[in-house]
Amino acid sequence: MTDYAGAIPMYVDRSRVFIDANQPKWIVIHKTAGFHTAQEVANYFATNAEMTSTHYVVGQDGTVVQCVREQDGAGGNCCLEAGHVAFLPEGVNLNLFTISIEHVDPATDNSTPLTDAQKRASFRLIADICERHGIPRRHGDANGGIIGHFELDPISRARCPGNYPWSELWAFLEQGGFMLDIQATRGYFTDLGNNVWRCTKTGYVVGHGILDFYRRYGGDALYGLTYLGLPLSNETPVTGYKGVVLQRFERGVVCWDPGHQVDNPPGSGPAYLMHLDRGPGQDPRIFTLQQQVVTLQQQVNTLKQEVDLLKQELDAQELGSGSPAKPTS
Image (tube, rainbow, N blue to C red):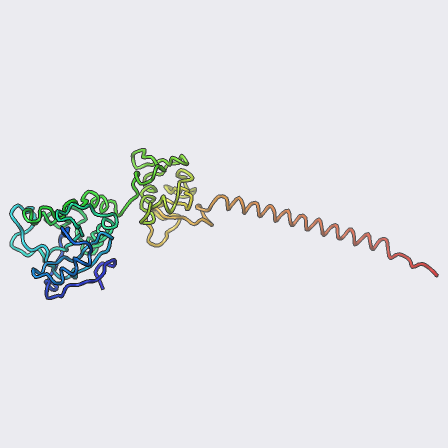
């Protein structure tokens, strides 16, 4: 069992950690300056004579290995060096106030950029730890947060975590997750500014709250572009519901409804997908087809009535003419 659902357990022996002594206030980001896999680093932590360790290791393939339980202090952030950031307390073992995350970097100077898989795994792990422990989702200060190893040890660990993508991490945490970037839309959209995009193929615009939903929807691939497709309308007010609008896409209908006046799907935020078979989100072609079915049914009923009348007339004619007489011999 791991503290983070996405992690593989490879725990060091608890004789190598500070058992039940951790009260995490900061997350400390590290890089390995060597090694090739997260499992390789975990094996090193299990056996090295210095008894160093971190709570997690994130591999270049996105694998997350947990080496130390979060309730225990690891062995990665012991002692401050001259020049450390001023807000870190002196005279205490910072292993008892931190959760440490290593990132595999084969380069000894920590110069290898994180892979996309590694970046995603790292950001999601950090967000999860912040959520569970109430750690501020920002750069650290005296009240807690996220810091680099170099901020503790600016002399011996000046290059740890090297070129970690801090600005992308802050954007991820501020936005609440990964989002579709305009450059990743492959020319399907142009940015009009003020959080509004125009589709270059259909001409419709997507903006503000619905655009935020679109840029996050699905959680992977190209988000809304992959799973909702291109816009087939602009925002349309929903009759009878103040402040509620909907927008149609190739593969769904998105409703902006902060007050959940129209619907309230479990766990939904101010924007959600609407029913396609009924209500305001119904595909207008369904109504047209329904009307056509009604018209055709009426025509069928009329034809049935005409057939019944013709049958009655034929029956009457046969009765009026009587049976033909038999010839005499």
